[in-house]
Image (cartoon, rainbow, N blue to C red; front, side):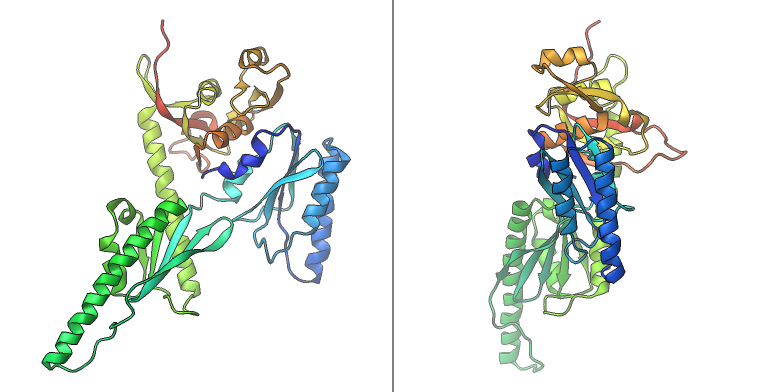
Length: 380
């Protein structure tokens, strides 16, 4: 998960109100219930010491939240009497979850916004394709491509002239498949998507797939459900797209964990991966975190660290903060500090499912990282 959308939060002083909110039902009782949940969230912020202006800003913003626009809810970040950012969730929180803290509370976002990878859906037929981007913020049109419009239909006759016409039809199909593949590859690069789902014509899908560049083809799956024509969407298509996204996310986590296990350093060797708060803080200071791994049940997520105004001003001891140029550091949870640092350096973040009996220590303490370059062992 990329956290670059958190940019409005990175260089702004707190403390911060963070509220994960579910707008609940659409009926009359839902409206009443929603009002009660808004008051509950605001009361929690007041009890934790939030200033009145920020509480009022949160109240006004949550009052305007509707289940139509945010069916699974949203997360809201506010400071200094202003709402700095709201973000749509993929999964509803269990009631309002409100925090008042020096930094935004980000770890719940990893689960509630999901590992849902950004997905480019291509609806193809023999004349062109429409592209749609699927992410946490909902579907978004991402352009289209049109190929040759004729001839595209075969005939049933078997005489020479009709066979010649059918050959021209097949040439049109082949030509259009090439144009669709080229446009799809460009859309994939431009969108930042992590996978592609091909939807539509049973013949055109494999023709497009085989013409895609290898890196795009490797992250492309096809489904027999749905098509390009208006009204051809179906619950089966939505389920297939969602399954493709979940499977891709699962593979990504497993691949990262395999790299992490292989990259952890033995004594005296180079490390391509680290775990434990001190090592992670050092990597965050040096902008070396490539992928931050967060397991929500880890005991080290709540370890105290010290931060300054800049995301890379993070230390394990208050006295060390002065060496980073911060004269007035504040104490925060380790996961908040590291997630802010990861967002500021465009590092990837992966939510690792809670530990089980088979492998309870990956990463140890619940926090680990793959590094952008290897860490050399300290001199004896």
